[in-house]
Length: 267
Image 1 (spheres, helix red, strand yellow):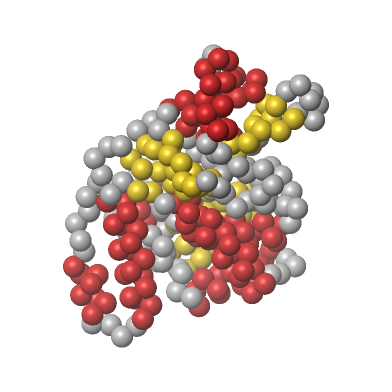
Image 2 (cartoon, one colour):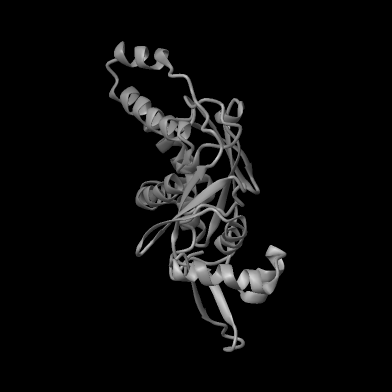
């Protein structure tokens, strides 16, 4: 996680395919990373900060190779370093930038425009349908150009979740789940069903975020996952991970979120 940044505000680390270019926001601007070795290093460091020897071990590359790539990432401001508290002769490396998303180097996938959605909006006086159409159109337009902004959506969702938590705050888990379900329904975000309490597993039907998206073959509810991560992290007073393993964008009939303990307490 970024050094000095509150745990839980970054999308869970996943290793990007080798045919993508990672985008990172640094104090000096946006940096693009297209090296498979650097992408591997950043994927590892997005999960947790590590000393040099462990970075070498996890990448499977020679020390000299890893050293060159770490130096370049340091110069770009994407990562930082600090003395190892156990051995001051060694360095600990960490992410100091925000992961914005990635660009695909393959030919972008083209989606056909859905005239039926536009027609439905024109025949409706419900402003909610306009915002739903607008959100879908922006998302699909970016995807069709090979731009994946899931990390940004997750970050935005986390901040929204922190803001809305007082509206669903509760002393008991059952009460929190009931209030969250009412909030989702009242704001037309979908209908939540509780599948399990250990671990907390939620099913969301009629999902606002992905219900109108084309088939992507992967989960697409990064914003919702960020909101839920913030809500459950606040409730449990520690870092929680939220993983979506079913989604309308994967051809499922609902979205499924699993809440699991994170690695560090929130400070």
